[in-house]
Image (cartoon, rainbow, N blue to C red; front, side):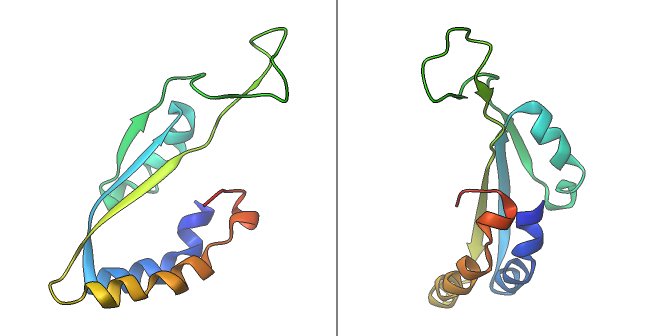
Length: 109
């Protein structure tokens, strides 16, 4: 949700040039449940990944229940850009990337 706040104005600017075709989020069920309400208006589609599909540990664990389960999510936006405005749309990405704050969001972009 922090990411959506950080990219609010670039998203609004992009919506003047095109429209959001769809928004997909992939992640663990418990994490997706946190987003269902806030993303409802955007018509977001949610895809549940298998629990335990990604395990992180510094070494091979002695007990397979000990690694941290991955709680990361992948957000994919699909835009439909108005004819003749693709160059303008692509030009917005420099500012868009500057507004992302992965350290503050605790995210990887």
